[in-house]
Structures are given as structure tokens and as C-alpha cells.
Image (cartoon, rainbow, N blue to C red; front, side, top):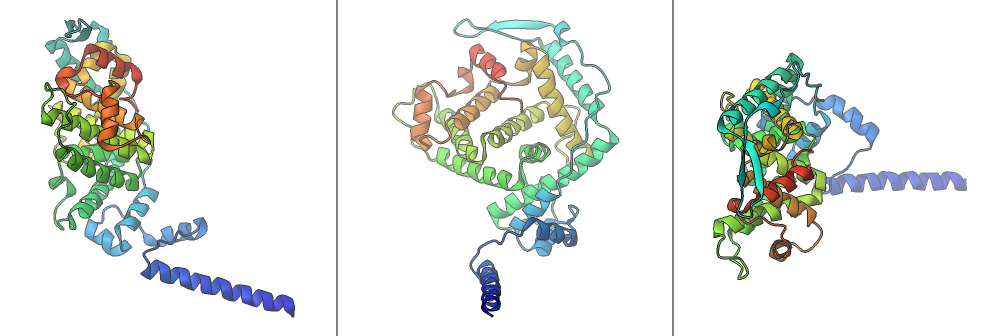
Length: 358
């Protein structure tokens, strides 16, 4: 009898606890994490469809957190990109050597060789795209659109119902979103990184010029350095590799826009998303294996500066933050204050660090 009484009381406790949990979940703002078995079963009945509009997804799943979770669970697997030709021997392209103020030599392609270098990158990228990869790019592009729509919704409180996300976001931001989705950045992580970016932008915009800042740097220049540093330092809380991927893709999107001749990446399509991914992969691979001139012809001084300051922020994560951390990094020579301050030494150090490829 005694055992039966204990079991009965134990069952009552479980039922009461479950009821309280449900009430807290509904009225207290606490999310209930289902166990793996129940959640797997729940996925089968939700019927996630990336073709649905943002408003339809919101109606089906109730809130943006659930949309993000469904998006993460239904991420498509990237097929292998097949290379249909061997890499060219870029060492045959004509190079030139220039010297910075300290006399450090920097090798890069001549303008004619540079044009040929990028023509070969485009050719290599195009040869990577298979019908299977086009299908993948279409799906990953839709995932990026949903992810970016949620970011926009959280920032602005609405999303235009009849508009594609690519119509009202900067092109570089959408391109970075496609690359992040392809590189496996979690949808929640991407949203948090965007929030950190908004904070860093406002923090740098309203920062008062410090007395220790050299006169040769304008307010726009040192604030840009501060913005990149602070964004990546905070974003590293998501993990240093995640911050590295997001920061790099932010810069890659600028490179691709600057070099987008012949590929209409500014107009979202299945092919354009495939080209965004393939061009980035070809660009990084070829710059990795083809020597100093290939690397230097890929990135401008401004892009080197941004990569450098992004890395400095990630490395400084967990120490002091904000302007005190920026001052410490500046005094340690870890910050580049303007693109005109980039030297050949900076370029070589960034190339050899491998930070720019992930």
C-alpha cells in the first residue's frame, strides 16, 4: 500500500510540474525545449517550406525564433563543386613591384594581368557550377532571404509583404547572408551578429575623438576602425570561428561587388546565388595557391585594413571592451587607422596568417 501511495504522489507531482511548465511557457516568456524524440516527431508535422513568404511563415510557426529553428533544421547540404579544368599557371602573368614609405616591396599584377587574373577566376567559378549545385544555390538563397527578412523584421518591426528581401536590403548584406548560410553559420548566430553590428555602428558614430588619436587620422577613418574592432570583439562571443566567417564574408561581398563585371549579382536569381558562392570559393582558393601577386590583386588596402581590424577585435575578445580595449589594441600596434596606413608588411602578415580564408 505504501508503495502505491508513493507512486500516486509522484505521478501527481509530474503532472503538476508539467502544467506549471506549460503555464510558464505561455505566460512567463520561457521557451520549452522539447526532447529529441518529441522534437523529431514535431518536425514531421510542421511541413517547413522555404517557398513560403515571411508573413506565411510567421503565421504558421507563430514567432521568429521558431522560424529560425526550423530553418536551421532544414538547411540543405552543399554538393561537391566539380572543377572541370585545371588551375591556370598564374606565375606567367606579368607583375610589378612597388615600395611603401618604409621601403617594403609589394608585388601585384599589372593592370592587363589583373584583368586576365579575374577573367580566369570567373571562368573557374563558372566551371564549378553543376545542375545539382544550381538547385542547392536556389534553396540556400531562399534560406538567406528568410534569415535576412527576420533580421529586418526585428530591426524595423515589419517586412513589406509584397517585396523580396533583396529589394530593400543593401546588395552586399544579402550576398554576405548567402555566403554565411552556405558556410554553416547558424541562423540565430547570424541575427545576433547583425545586432552586434548595429550596436558597433552607433557606438563608433557617436564616439568622441580621443585625445591620444594622431591628427593624421580623420574622424571617419578612426571611427571606421573602431566600428570593425568593436563589432568583431563582441561578435566573438558567438565563437571566434563564427565571428571570423561572418567578418570575412562581409569583406568578400565588398570584393565581389567591386569585381562584379560580367555577372549580374545585384539581381537575385538562382544563377546569381550560385555565382556568389562559386566566385568567392574560386577567388579564395586561387589567391591561396597562386602567390603574392594574386593575393594583392584580390584585396584593396581598405579591405586589408578591415580584415586586419576584424581580426584584432576577435583576438581581444574577453578582455576590456569599447574604447579602453580599442586604446590598448591601438597602443599595441594591432589596429590600422586608415587605408593609407596599410603597408606591404601588413599585406604579407595578413596573407601568411591565413585569417582571410576559412
